[in-house]
Image 1 (tube, rainbow, N blue to C red):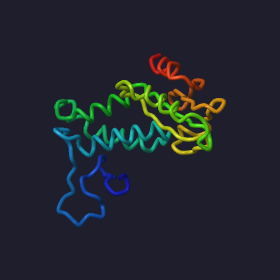
Image 2: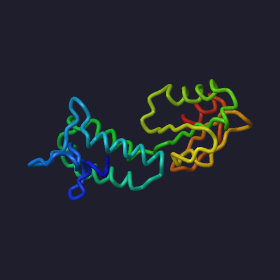
Image 3: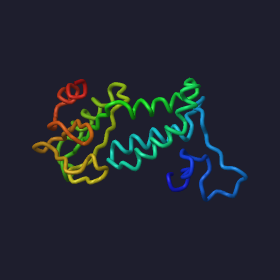
Image 4: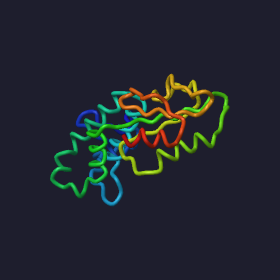
Length: 178
């Protein structure tokens, strides 16, 4: 997306790719009504991707896009709901949740589902979630995280600094609410 749609000179993203047929002008979607614009969706997606991977370049590109459209969003907030959601995500503390299954599929898969259910049980606009088996290296959030005594584990983190892993849904719910 960045390679094919980014406006490297002025910021933001074009609606058509760089390998599209030659046009007189390449336009950019701006407003978020009734469907989120490509720029707002890209910004929000890049911020969430940065939270999962730790890749600063994704965050930098999102910030650049927010700067391009912030003046218009300030004057016409009703037309930029999705962009304002991205700005809120950027300005708020974000929690990362890593769900780790025991290696080789050992353990109770329903326990992993229960942990995921806790995260998804409420609207949590400032939480990103990733899951995988022990030994998973990507996204970065999963790197060097382990199951606990053969049980799926949940790590609640901020800026990749994690609390001790929990294995019970009630412990995860408590960690997400503090």
